[in-house]
Structures are given as C-alpha cells and as structure tokens.
Image 1: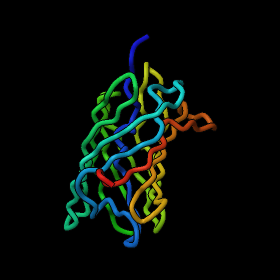
Image 2 (image 1 turned 90 degrees about the vertical axis):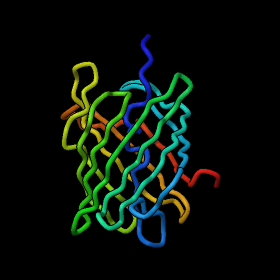
Image 3 (image 1 turned 30 degrees about the vertical axis):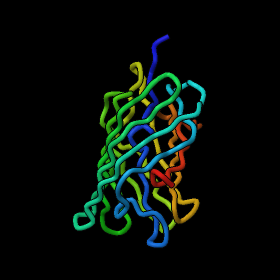
Length: 171
C-alpha cells in the first residue's frame, strides 16, 4: 500500500478569516499549530493529525501567504497557499500541496463568522475528479477551525477529509 500524505489540509490548513473581534488571517502572523483529524486519501479514514504553518499577511494589499506542513502517523506533507480578500466579501485562494502535486483555485465569500470556499478546479486523484470545499469558522477569539470536504465530481454526498483547530504556536 502506497503512503499518500494528507490531502489538502492540505494546503488550506492555514486558511481562515474572521471579524475584527476574532482571528483574522489577513492580519494574523507568525507560527500557528493545528490539531485535529486528517484523511490520507479520498476513501481513507480520518486519523489524528497536526499541522504547523507560518502566516505572513500583507494587509495593504489584502493578501496573506501560508506555508507549512501537515503530518499523520504515516508521514508529512508540505503545503502552501495564497489568499486574496476582494471587494464585497469575496475571497479567492490558490493552494498547493505536496500530497497531490496540484495547484487548486478556490473562490468564495467571507462573512463576520465564516469563510466558505469552493474549488473552481477539480482535485484529481488516480485519474478521478473530486469537488472540494472549505469552511473556516472561529470557535473563540484565539483560534480558528478549518473543515475540508470532498466528493466525486457531480455526486451529492460530501465527505469530511480534514477537521483542524489552529492556535498560535506556544498557546
């Protein structure tokens, strides 16, 4: 059986935004650690995982870079994303993960308590196309929660492949 590192918490591992009273990725910076559950494949069960990311915001341009890695018992996968805040609550992202070797484009919206993103390009795994989406919320003022789902292209049912809660490293 071939090891496949975590899908895309894949790169979206660090993706979050929230109102001024909570964690706002566009102004947050430094090292963050995520703990939760990750799947290592489209049909693999969720298992305990951990991600470490470095967040570098550029508030003047409305962008943020997130670079890091996610690990499960079987191994580690590097991740990277660029997030862009647009007018009227629009958010776009470009995401790369060593686990898939692909760059996915995401588009969505930001509200005071949530960012919701949907991939505009499919995730390709072993020749099959998958739709992916990400929801980011804030359980409290010092953290953000990340949830990624996927489904075979055109299917109705979504499957959770990542659930992580991030806090500043050292907290």
